[in-house]
Image 1 (cartoon, rainbow, N blue to C red):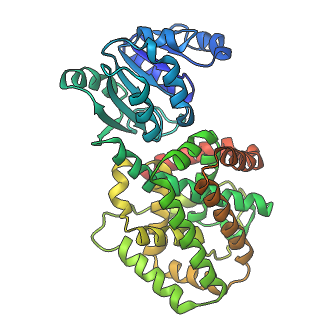
Image 2: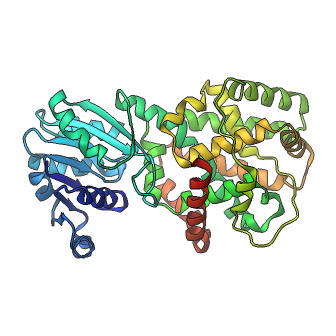
Image 3: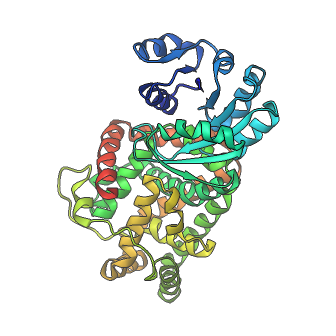
Length: 418
């Protein structure tokens, strides 16, 4: 089967190279201004870079759209009349609702739809990573023809029944996870300091927070914007996270210890009861990966971002361990550090005392509270431009350290998830 990829950006190029290595004939395209650059980049491979998306569609028995989720409808509409009879169509967007809507609206009824989503960023090769596949509209013969193409990526394949299930799991895992780290980055930006220069962010948990935040901001804003704004299940999750954070923060300000402890204990019992297969992060390893080169005096941290996450899982009746089937590295790390906090009685007690009574961290918590509100409002209103602008302001603030953060976080992920 000839493979076509419309969108040779970061992820599209990874797919193209991998399939080329496996002996497939691959045709691809991207924006016109990138034509010569991509032709040179793929010289000596079996990837043929064409000038137009329509030309790619005409040649492809298996056609993948690897474009921004917000632009999928526009691109599919422009190429639909060039798609081959009986072709198998896939998308590599992180939210499937607008993708499937575009496929069903614009493509001929004779094409098959067998879509996918790699649960990793372009910094990782496809080998050993998780790949979700969704056989939306395809007969058995074509299913069996296309499955080897997905298997050639050498990823761990997870088949889900339908695109609604995919989007629900992504909302449970990615949307709120990203928002939490984005809120931390925004809070640090608004406070005007780098967290590795601050004594309250010097433990293993905080190293994971910092490196994962830098990792997220090292990628492109549109990936996260699509996940949060275009996923029909995401707003409910984001809304509850903002509500949990706000209610816990009010208890902290009022020093309402009884209600605060009761709320956290109920959340702990729901999420971290003894039947779970725990992640069990290694504190020594977490401590080895950090952005700071100078040891800082440790100040206790309220870990409000993690307290709110666990409370939100409880209020939404979500078992995060069930979603590990479609985990992303940031989600696994976030669940892992939340677990580390709640399973360590001494650390949890220090956190509670700090949250309620330590005024040193209160200003940082206020900035985080404001940042959560900002992100929740942007997502609630579906403000795509606001999301991109907000994201890129923080990206610019951390610009000098993003590459190092992404490099260290990749090593940390490998170490902690192997």
